[in-house]
Image (cartoon, rainbow, N blue to C red; front, side, top):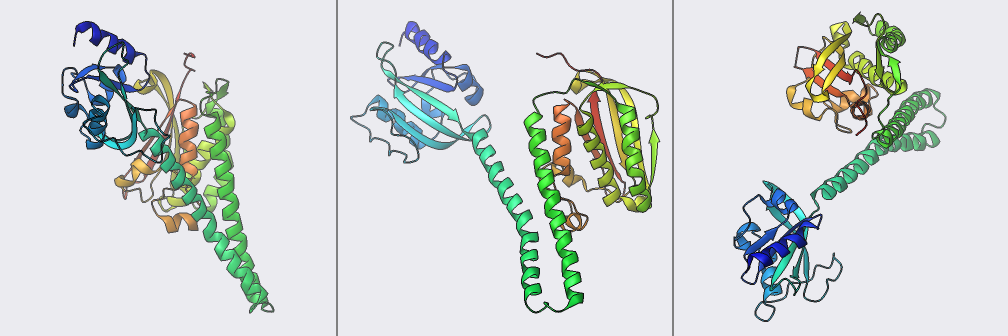
Length: 370
């Protein structure tokens, strides 16, 4: 095949936004666009197609498109629309970019004006598949979290209507439990709504200035009675004076109250909770100066294997204890999304028996809009 044909094939592929390759009549690769090189690597040209994409069904479809008289037609995928005549489509799990990729693959003849051959378009569905799996997991988790207290409440209602109808002592005890379960469902629904609002706003970065030390002093004042009830003293450092940063005051209050509440719930045994604010002259990931707010405790700490997953929705280190304490499993997920909206960072340092430190890092100035 001439260089001119190769150039024309490459020109055809470069205008396509998905990974796409072209092969000649002998199934050797003659062109690949940038998306294909990103998926399958460089040095794709002049290679047998079977060495680029090692999947029997895809290779069989290429053979059929190139020579339909001597190769069987691929079996149509009922989950996909019927392809045009002479075109094969399929879903397949292929090895690409060092990982397993779920892809929709379309094999079609090269335009006659270019020459004898075939094009192979590879639409990576992995991101969509992962998003769908996350959605299914989220629905399953929410259903489970709501079903447990609802089942308990239904059981108590049936008991109160039957055997315990005239038992005042049992009635009071059951009503107390039902009140707790209803409160738990209410907290879950509130956190779900809060998470939804935060995610809806995540792309809109707050730019209005706020006084961060003043905000922290307000949060500490609000949480001090709760801390005293838990036998914990809150010690502060660096939150005097004034320092303006861009941010949403309501959301930042939500962050710091959440982190302090967590420390009081799960680390009260240490008797100490620290709130410290310090300046970072240059934060590499934020590409500029930043302010760090550290919430520290001397409690039992968290095993290192849990740290990467703490901000996942409904992830709990100790499920039973979290539910006893009234946790919904969404608090740190909300914190993460709020910090993302502020283009900041969350760092978690902890070890069993050594307490925990949650550090919120916020940029000192708003980055220019690209």
